[in-house]
Amino acid sequence: MKLIIQIPCFNEEHTLPATINALPKKIPGIDEIEYLVINDGSTDRTVAVARSLGVHHIIGFPNNRGLAKCFIAGIDACLRLGADIIVNTDGDNQYNGADIARLVQPLLSGKAEIAVGDRQVDSIEHFSFVKKKLQKIGSWIVRLASGSNVVDTTSGFRAFTREAAMRLNVVSDYSYTLETLIDAGCRKMAIANVPVRINKPLRKSRLIPSTSAYIKNSASTIMRIYSMRQPLKVFLTLSGLFSLAGIILIIRYLYYYFSGSGSGHMQSLILAAILIIVAVQLAAFGLLSDAISASRKVNDEILYRLKRIEYDKMDRIIAGNDFFLEASATKSVPFTARPKD
Ligand SMILES: Nc1nc2c(ncn2[C@@H]2O[C@H](COP(=O)(O)OP(=O)(O)O)[C@@H](O)[C@H]2O)c(=O)[nH]1
Ligand SMILES: [Mg+2]
Image (cartoon, rainbow, N blue to C red; front, side, top):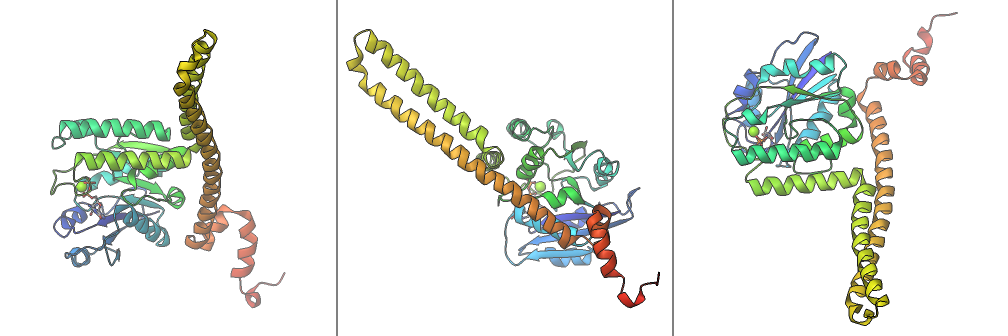
């Protein structure tokens, strides 16, 4: 069982030593632990510091591409490096490295495919009252959207099984945290909450520069990903609201018409017609998006199977699929060396 701990880093030369030094070297049930730093185009000495700390693998971009791209590049590298479990933690030493042992437990015992570190936001002293409330409301909306039970949805302290990691596809640029959860929830993956400790902040969050930016980015991510996954629900609900308003106006018009004063209510009849036209268009958009979403599901499945072929060693494929067993056994045993019957 191989664990790779990945750390997305954007200018973390000052905080990386504390982060790396706190990572566990041994965890019962895990044979190998390796660290991977993903350098997101840092302009400081992040890479040199990572090298001097003995980090096993360092990958990176020549320029800054944002946390979501960084996270996915890390997952890709970990899978190629043969990780059975991948843990993501931040480079600012926000999360308590020792708690990784706790975080991977639901995965080791087969109870979950993804574990999310729960920071117990209420008890974090350096979070303002507004930030705590916003995080709680945000997490509640994500739970509704994903149909999952994740408590701390913006936590970057997470563990993924190899299978779960291969299923991840991120399309947002800003952050992967909400998207991966909504996606995993909609796919009915098993997600566990694990209470974890956090350290005193070494620097301010750069990802959340202001409360308004946080609300704007989170709301747009949630709407975008949810409507991608559940387009019929979104568009038919909107269409229903417009139809309802239109129908109420038509009933109102008919009421006045039959009571003899219909002529003065032409405007409401025009508005009703517009509302109904919009409702029909929304329903049509819903059907179109549903067709696109169905093809996304098929694409996800194709990508997953491609990843399995690309990342997995032949013996892993053999273990998971009878069809490959025969084919690869014939291939891997050289013809001349085959024992005679
Ligand atoms: N702010 C920021 N962080 C990035 C970026 N790319 C990768 N990261 C890493 O993402 C992690 C979380 O960033 P941080 O600013 O601490 O945000 P927080 O999660 O709100 O505390 C850190 O390990 C960063 O180094 C980026 O483009 N901007
Ligand atoms: Mg941080």
